[in-house]
Every structure is written in structure tokens, then in C-alpha cells.
Amino acid sequence: MSWSRPELGDWSSPAELTQLQRAELPRVIAQAMRSPFYAARYDGRAVPRDAEDFAGIELTTKQDLRDQYPFGMLAVDRQKLATYHESSGTAGDPTASYYTDDDWADLAERYARKWVGITPSDTFLVRTPYGLVITAHLAQAAGRLRGATIVPGDARSLATPLPRMIRVMRALDVSLTWCNPTEIMMLAAAAKAAGLRPDQDFPALRAMFTAAEPLTEVRRRRLSEIWGGIPIVEEYGSTETGTIAGQCPNGALHLWADRAIFEVFDPETGELSQSGRGQLVVTPLYREAMPLLRYNLADDVEVSDDGCSCGWLLPTVRVLGRSGTGYPVGAATVTQQRLEELVFSLPGSYEVMFWRAMAHPDVLRLEFEAPDESRDQAVKELAGLIDRELGVPHRITGLPLGTLVPREALTAQRDILKARYLFGEGEDWDKAVMYA
Image (cartoon, rainbow, N blue to C red; front, top):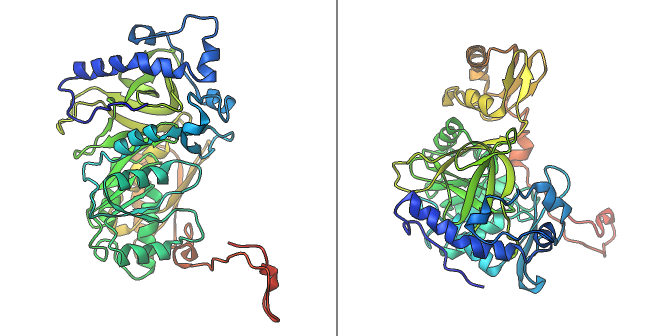
């Protein structure tokens, strides 16, 4: 089936946006009932049919998806599928996701809603895994939709080490990249290890797209500063849903509420609302292969209906991470988000990028890398920030560069071997068959 999907500007008020969502719900619910999971859930019960019934639909959970692995959520014939994916498995058991060609049209359009634009003149380095997760395929589809040249840089691959990516970025005049925030820092460190200046020696680079990690505003500003002030454009999504929010020119993340219905679930009360703080619940409006009704992503978010001066008539979202990410230290609870804000509040001249922390019940241990000339001052200032902002016992240690991220990771280019079976005398035949 082929649907007419809305574009930004097709509604002029929140009320029109709500009406757009409600008009799609009968079709969305009917498609969901074609899957074994939803058909079984409503077997012998009144089947919801429209927007009036939507409030009574129970949540779909990640455990539901795990229990239905691999094809219990499938609502079309398998011959219609274009791609199959699985989550990164951070919680253990995989969740399956699958998409038709029509689904992919929606996915690519949503990703391509970048305020900086993706154009045919762009060379776009995709630096996320091309494995079972959706991230690299999503960027490639959106880039091709807009006519960009794609450089499939992959990630976590022996074939594309960091030094090779730095060479590619300069040789090909890469103008856009797609990777997680940590990879943005790794690329910068690799550039420095090669004797280059990230803020000056990549003149074609005009923006870096990022996702997959909660990103505080202070860290985003620091990443931009490291790369010469270019925009760091964030988005938010999952393998199960594709892109569900994108950043506007003002830096706010807006939910694509014309392509999905979003609700906020309070796990303590069981109540759902349109805004506020809780877990994000998603109902995609243009999903053919794997419809999801009130799918609880279990991400902690804060959704607001307050207007944004960018002019996009869409709710905004702050992604706070997954439940249970805070740890008690003394009388306080310490979160990664708050520590990140403090670490990247240090002056950029201190060149602090890589850090780690461990929360013990009686003390917070935090370590970071810094050059010799700024390390002691950085320790002193970060200790003061933690005293003032968190008030917890702490032990801060400054480490030499290369301690947390070994220099070899930034400079090494391992040989990539193809499978080989015949060797000459004196050659290393222990490498037979094996390749990597």
C-alpha cells in the first residue's frame, strides 16, 4: 500500500495536527490487527477501531517484542519485506524490526528533515554500524533520497579504522557525517594524533549528525567548538521506530508528531499524558510491516507543548536516558547526564574529552584524560564543581592522554586479510581460512 504522508507546514495549529493524527488511527489499528501478536491480544475481545477507542489500548512493551521474536509482529506477507533488523541487544534478548519499501520511504523522509539540509553536492560519511541495527541504513537511504554521495564508513569494523576515516574525510571533502557523540570525539582525537587540527583542517565539513547517546547541550557545544563551530545536529530514534525526533535551528528536539502519536507514561501511576516527564510511548502512523500500538520505548523523557520560536508546530522532547541510570552516592543520586554537564563545563582549552566514573555508596570516583599542562587545574576545577553542584564525596584523578583511549586505537591500521588456502614455502599458513 502507498500512503500520502504529511510534510512540515501541512498544518497550521496544534489542533490541526491532532486532527491529522486522529484521521489516520482507523487505518493504523486495522493494519496492526493483521499481525499475530495484536490479533491474539484481542481474540475474543472488542477490537479497537478508531480514535475514540485509542485511549483504551494497552501498552506494547519491549518484552512483547522479545516474546514475539522473530515474526510475531509481522502484518504483511514476508515476500513484501525490504529489510530485517534487530536491536543492538543492550538488554540481552533481541527485538526484531522489519520494513517494507513504503515503510522505508517514511523512514528516509523523517531522517532527511535536517535543518541544515542534505543536498546533491554533499559527500556524506556514514560512521555507524552497518550491522543488524538500522542506523547506517537509515542515513544511507535518506542521503540517497536527497542525492548526496554516500561514503559507507561503517563503525566497529577492522576495515574502517579511525586513521582511514580521517584520510577519507580530507581526501573526499566530506561535508556531512553521521555518528554517535563519542565517535565525534574519537574522530577529533584521531585527527590530532595524525597531526591535524579538527577546527581548521577539514574545510569542507559543514555539519555532523549524531544520535544514539543522550547529549547534553554543554557537550554539544563542546563538540561544535572542537570541530571549528560547525553545527552538531542531533536526532532521536530507535531500530524499532526509525527517527522520531529531530533538532530545529534553535537546538530543540522536536517530535515528528505528524508521523507518529507520542504520549508520556508515568510508570508509578500508570497514567498517560500528552506532555510532562516519564517514559515515551510511540504509535507510528505510517508503518506497514510492523505496526506498533502504544509502544513503550522505556526511555525517560520530558515532553513539552510549549511553542518554539523556530516555527515548527511540533512538541519538543528532552531525552533523559533509560530508567535506573542514577546511582546513590552519599545522600545524593548521581546521573551520567549531570556528570557530563560538569565535565564539559571545564574550559575547552583544558582539552578534556574522555572520562569515566564509578559511583560507590560512599564516594564518587571520576577519571579523565588531559594534557600535562592542564591536568592539575582541571582536577581542581572539576572537584570544585562537584562539591558545589552535587555535594558528594569524590576522588578525582587526571590521567595522561592515551590512558582511557589508547593511542593505538587512534593511529593503528590493521591488515585486512582475505581467506587464503594455498601458501608458498616460508609463508605463514597459520593464517589459512581465517580472515579479519
